[in-house]
Image (cartoon, rainbow, N blue to C red; front, side, top):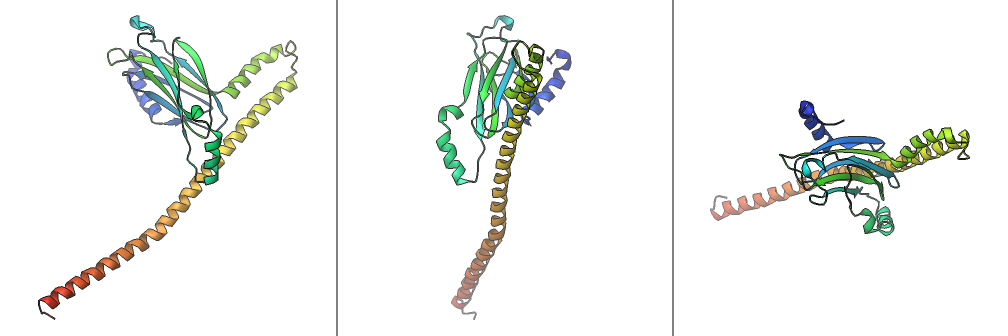
Length: 244
């Protein structure tokens, strides 16, 4: 869907909703209207091992005499690793993940359309950001983003290849088994991710329960100590004035 002057207000409302919401990984898309050189991002939550395919559409990078070499446009993919309360998991993830894998990956957009692939290295929120150096309030730029799971895209493409199964030496049963294998892989990854999030929530619940139990006791001790100190001061004052 393209933004036109007739539906620009509706487009701005849609952009605000897209910027501040986390969308589903399975298939998510957004149209961004960039009016400055600041990053405009869309965030998705994905489990470790997911292969994401980010399809972009940038119809304005060549418009109005623009050229990518004069005002580069960057598509940056970064991940915020989900924190875990398990110390053993933290030590394992530090040993398993390299900084180069979790560091942001930037790609320069030299064509109006294209696809960027990204392997999710850990459970967390993946941010896909657009930064257009040539965008301004007077000359805004439109960008379309669509994020899909690579395995699901391949599964849909395989349906089109089913007609050529004889030429590719694949039977219908083999195609169905391949689709089932991809589906099971995605289900297992989502289940592991959900279990990790449930563990984090459990740790947060225990921490909140501990804080709610001990904090009133600490407050009561502070009040008793304050009252005892104030009483001593009052008694000392009265003795000094020889009132008692």
